[in-house]
Length: 477
Image (cartoon, rainbow, N blue to C red):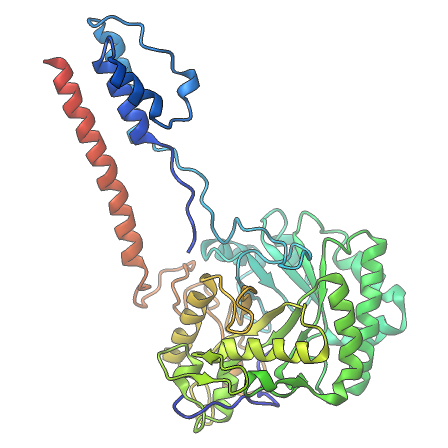
């Protein structure tokens, strides 16, 4: 969860979805009209008919009617009009249709590139069943929670939403000391729900390493291994991904990205974890907050660099790579740290990222304008399905923090103002997602283009219908 970073990356002060083709209605229309008009087709007409690429050619017999048979002509003309009125759309390839399998052949755990954290430290949130409806309206398929609340698991049954559940930090020591505790937890929180509730991942603890509790850090590896062994005994180890999210505090330094390495004192815990992840294909999850980095040093970090807005960016002096936003730089810093530790094959994913829409006077940059800018630009960047300057082949994936403002979270004001939605289901940070209630915020800038696409479809088929009408009139003369 958001908190001030222990190690802040410093920067200089100045610093599509493809669509499957539709059925060939134009080809079909031309073919039918040729058959209507030519009772005895010429050799050139027959050649044109053969060259038309139409998948139903095999079932279209040559015309056998006479030139005066107007009834069959009218029937075929009606077929043309039906095809125009009810276009056959092929399945679209969207983020939701892309394979869930990770780049390294790991477990099916993430659809597309965009997910959200569903925190519930509040007393005014809607019931989980309503939350499911909200998620579907917003078209968010990847959801991560911080426990395994049974009401949430029940609400997600049969929804098709990807759900990552969590084993809170307070359970880790018992699970590390007693493998039966891990099995008990799975029998209570996973077995009764899987697979009707699509549990695709389990996070073991959250931001354990780098904290003050060394006993908890010592228990993390044992807990992860015992939970994995229990999953294997239940034959779920190849179906449910096991991971643990880290804060930026695990890095000794992160600027420039190529200089990033893990803290030496944490390698005793990190190395067995990374060995485990490299064998299972699980990603390295990091909580990356450009907002926290900017808030900790606003006089030396360009806010435009943190918000994905136009800026001079930075150039890594070692690699020569240019970064125009801090999010990519933080991802690559993690990749460089993994490479330096000998684990260059592990994928990096972002377990949390976001920007607070309100804060205390001492919390620089925490306002609605910046929150909208960051979350909207982040969503656009993720939808590009591209990698980072150092790992262009690794598509960036992230869980946004958070679904709701959580009014009972302790700490500074920012902790209670990360939500994209208000408790009533209306939009709080408007990035173009649809809420349960109308929003008074200005529309998303992409909406006019979507409307333009709809009008283009109407014009296309109206023109075809007009052509069909003209041919009909010609036949009647």
